[in-house]
Structures are given as structure tokens and as C-alpha cells.
Length: 253
Image (cartoon, rainbow, N blue to C red):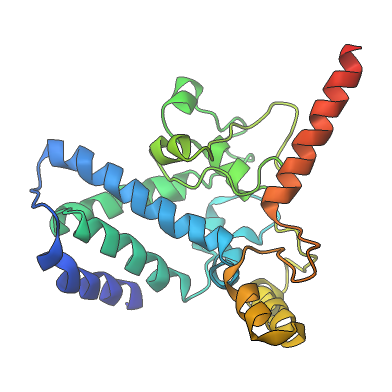
């Protein structure tokens, strides 16, 4: 109900400021879906790169296995936050409201499907479709805590914006995804899954020296530290790639 209200509110607030007017036609559907994926990318990217938003999104990444039930593992405030961002961007860029609801239906259906686990669909690459759209394999990468896979594949169906912003990552045959989050946690604990990241952020803010550092803990990526000993996903990926390149160089000698 809160999400529906957020969509309706943003539609009513921003529709008069739309840069163009579109209609519910097949060609505007193409435009609308590209805009929707941009809006989804923005929301999803912020959910991984701003620690306050990660506190809301981390619940979805907490499960240590992949299955369709993960689709519904969300902190209750994430839906309104996501829909405010996505709806605002889409309406401002002129996506027709009925068309937007149709796109949301497609997105929700595909978004549920890509959470299918290895127990049902062992190879989630879907053959040639792996080169065209984001498949269950791509989303398994997104949910993985492997250094190479973290903070990748933010789009939902069309991979256009992951390609544009360099965040597209294909699943490697020799590197199966390890699901969950990097913080030590109990995936069977409701309290830890839903409130563990909020608790950790609160502790960091309280301990941080000065107002500036306290605010930075809220807006910087997870793993950021005022001491400079950062353990962000970006740094973990860089270290992994550096080690892999060094290993390859030694093997080629």
C-alpha cells in the first residue's frame, strides 16, 4: 500500500514537469523500458553505494542460497524508497503513467523469475539470451559476495545501462557464486537479517570522531572507514583482479 501511494504521489507531483509526452504504444514502450531500466539502475546502484540505503537493501542480499522466495525478502521501507526514485525519474522523462504500470508488471514478473535457484534451473544462462538480457545467471552474480561479483549487474531485464556504466559481469564457469553479505551474520535470525546493518551503521556513527565523519558513514559505501582502512566492494574487486593478474603472469612464465 505504501509503495502504491508513493507511485501515485510522484506521478501526480511530477507529471506536469515531464520533458516530453508519450503514449501507450509499442514504440513508446521501447523508450519507456529503457528509461525504466535507467531509473532502476539509479535506485539499485544507490542501494549498494550509499550505506544508509544499503541498510534497507541488504535484507534482500542476506539469504545464503538463491531461490524464488528471495524475491520477497525486502526491508519494508525499501519498496517506497525504490518506487519514489524510479517513478520520479520515469515521469520526469515523460513515460506515460499507464505505460509505466505496464512496464512495472513486466519488470516484476521478470524480476521474480531471475531469482530462480540452481535447484530448479542449474544453468541460469538461458543459452543465447545470456548475451541479450540479464538472466538468472547474471542475477546470481549480483547476489554473490565473491569479490569479482560484488556490485555488478544492477539492471533487471535490459543490460544496456550495466554496459554503459561498466557494471556488467558474466558468471564464470570456474567461479560459482557464494551468496550472502560479507558481514558475519546469522541468516536464520530475523533480527540480524532485517536490522543487523542498521545496528552496525549506528555503532559506526556513534564511534566516529566529529560530525563530518558521522555523516560520511551514512552516505559513503559500505566498508568505508574514517581511518582510511576501507573494505568496500570496489577495493575488494581491485585486489582480486590484481592478484589474478599476478597469478596469470607467473603462470605464463
